[in-house]
Structures are given as structure tokens and as C-alpha cells.
Length: 277
Image 1 (cartoon, one colour):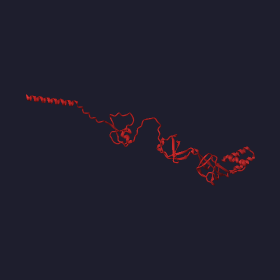
Image 2 (cartoon, one colour):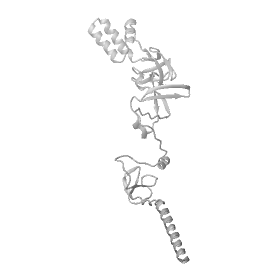
Image 3 (cartoon, one colour):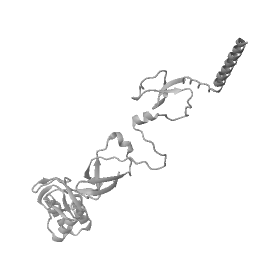
Image 4 (cartoon, one colour):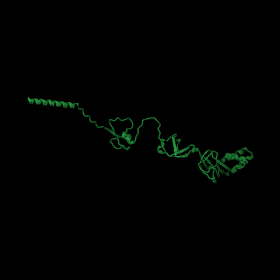
């Protein structure tokens, strides 16, 4: 009897233990499924996304590692995808998209030069000698009509004497023709009129500035012999002036006629000069 009772108790305990274990296993959550390995379609360089490679490694285009393209990635129709780490390596910065004028400032050294369109040349009208200079140094400022030099032109003597002789004949046609011959020898009108008033040959000529400005070139000295049409003076206006800029040829495409320019000079600290290309 006692043996039977002990067997029943053991069976009951075993049943209770089985029930407890069953309950524990029933309420224990299932272990999370191990993620499957992502499938790589190919490797590529984000800077050249059209070129594909079948294995990882260094990009032949840029000094960077190739990036894998996974099968579960939604590839954009266009554009370049760059990881955060690659952006940091490249020093990239992001900004909001907005409509505005692009400005690419550039600094360079420049030299001041005269505007060639505002330069006039004073030449010798005939062969002669420079008897006196009134302007004897470059960069000297002159006014319009100011005397530059005095020339002695002896070759005018014969033509002027012929003209005076024809005038005495009283023939208007001959006089007019003789006067035109004087003009063809580049004899100024003021010299011809002085010849007519005085009745004596005029072989001295005062060269005068045809405009106000600065004498930027002086190619003559007192006592020098000169030839016809030889340039003696160059006079330039210095408003405006040119800035000749040493600009890299590789950036020449960014220049355009009408572009604004701001210049500074150590001679005028704190002052800005504005111009255009």
C-alpha cells in the first residue's frame, strides 16, 4: 500500500514538473532570426558611378576605396551617392538650394598703364632742328595748346618765297594753287597766315599740345635734327587708366566683358577703385 502511494506521488510530481517546464517554454520568446548576409551586386566609385567593378579595392580614378552596391538598395535614377565618411575626407559642405548670382572672387597683382585709346602723338611736320624744348621731362603735365618745342625748318624758305612772289602777281588761281602747295608740306595754317601778314619767310614753328594730359614719352632733345613725321611727344589722359592684371590662363573662362573689378593700392590705404573688364 505504501509502495503504491509513493509511486502515485512520484508520478504526480513528475507531471507537475512537466507542466511547469511546458509553461516556461510556452511563454519564452522565440530567439531572433539571424540576419542573412547582404548581397553585393558590384563595387563602384561614387565620383564615377557609371563604372562598375566585380571586386573591392582602390578606385583607379580617385584616391578612395570602392563602395559596394547592395541588391536591396534603391538606386536613384541619377546623381552621385557619397557616404558621410567620404564627405568628411573630401572636405565637402552642404547648403540649402537657392537661386542667386554666383560670385567667384579672385585676387591678383596688376600694374597701372595708360589707356592707349587716349594717347596722342605730336610729330615733326618737316625736316629741321629742335632749337628749344619747353617740356624736357616725361610725366610732365601740359594743357591743351601749351608750347612743347620750337623747331627751325629751313626747307620751308623756298616754298614760302615762291608763294609771296605769286601773290604779287595778283592772279587768284595761281595764288590759291601756291597756297595749297604750302599746306601739302604740312605747314600749319597759323604759319601761312603769319607769312601773309609779314611778307617774310617763316621758318620757326612752335609745336603745341593738341590736348590736356601728361607727356608719357619724350623722344627729342635740344639741338637734335629731326625728320618729317618723326614722333617727338606722346600725350595721354590719365582718366581713366588701365590695370594690366596677371591673370592665370586656366581661369580665363571666368572672365567676361563688363565684369566688375575692385582695386586697392598701398599708396591710398583704405581706398577702393572700381572698374570693369
